[in-house]
Every structure is written in C-alpha cells, then in structure tokens.
Length: 248
Image 1 (cartoon, rainbow, N blue to C red):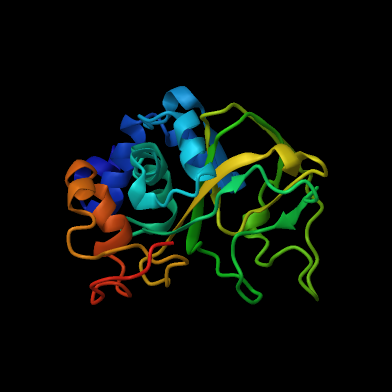
Image 2 (image 1 turned 30 degrees about the vertical axis):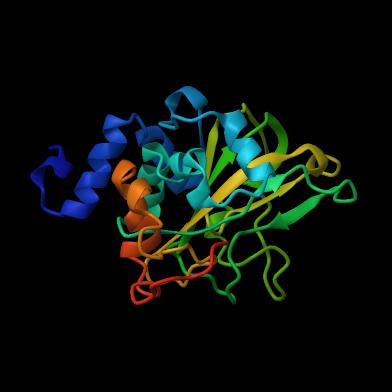
C-alpha cells in the first residue's frame, strides 16, 4: 500500500510525494533519525550561482534585493525537507549569514538554534536550511542530540555520551538540521567559514526578521517565485495586518 496516494491527509500526502519525486526519502529519514542531513549540490533545485549568492551576502544585500537569495529561500529541495519537519505552513523566520567572520573569532561553541527553557518540546518549531558557500570540513554535529530535550550546558541536565561527526561538505551543498540539533565549529575553522543559514519556523512563531510587505514591493518576485508570498507574508499571522515593515 502506498499511503500518500490515498489522499487521506492532503498536506502530509503532498509532502511525502514530493520527497519521493525529488529523491529525498533517504535525506528525510536521516533528518528524522539523526537530526541533520546533507544534500549534494547536483541534487538541490537551486538555479542560481553559489558565487553570486556569496557576493550578495558579502555586500549586505537583503532578501528582496537579490534573485539568488530568493531562489535559495524558495528552493524546492530545501522546502520539502523543512515542511517534512514543521509542516506545510512553515514561514521564513530569518537569515543568519556567516561570511568571512572577524579574525579574532576562532571557534563557534556547541549550541542549537533554539532559545527555549528546558525541557525542549519533542517536535521542532524551527528548521535550518544552510547553504554551503565554500567547502566546509570543520563544522561538527552531535547526531541524535535533537532528542536530548535541552541545550548544551543546561544546568541540571546530563547529555548522553555520543560521538561528534565532522561534516566534510562541498560548496553548493545544502545542509538541513532540526532546530534542537547541537552543532559548532572547531577552533580556527570559523575564520574561513562561509555559510548561509535560512531559518524556517512554524506559522505561530514570531519571525526573527521582518520582511518588507509594502504594496508593490514583492509583486514582481511573487509572480516569478510563487512560494515567496507564503514564506514571508501569507501564512505569517503577525504580518498580515501590516502594510509596511522594515527590511532586515
């Protein structure tokens, strides 16, 4: 029996079928079990140039000023995996570029992308889809840590003794991880790290950044990228009554 084709649970069925069509079932399984997965460059749907994406971020270009950044935000592979974890109404909460950081930054300590009190909920409310702009070999994760129920170093908690995994990832790859996953960057590596994390959240979560929704601002982009309106306007209840908000 192929349950998704019974159409008994439309939003879930559509996502399950899309994962199959895009060849992402293995990635979805990894995401569920280990808390992270890496999609090779040739398997992503990103139609832009990673180099031009890096230049846009380095020049402090905002989302709605860059076609490449919009393509990355609406990439069908990224969205399929994001929606697998947090549902069809996920919205783009924020973008956190990590481009050529200052020389004095030598390490990114073990952490997660959430800031909630212990215990963390079993289901994620945030997912990170991170574009790798230059080859990475010092980003590390603790597989399975998304199930610990707390952040690293939380008082009164004890983390299981699980080995870390060093991610060796090619430029143009897409790394997707559960919002509760523990990860960091080894000492010295942060100086050369160039990544572009997009943070997606459930509909009811207030966005980390506010996108411009002024009349006419997004009409051209929305026509070319139908997913864009849903990601930054339509399903975000906090922005629906705003005519204009500040750009990030």
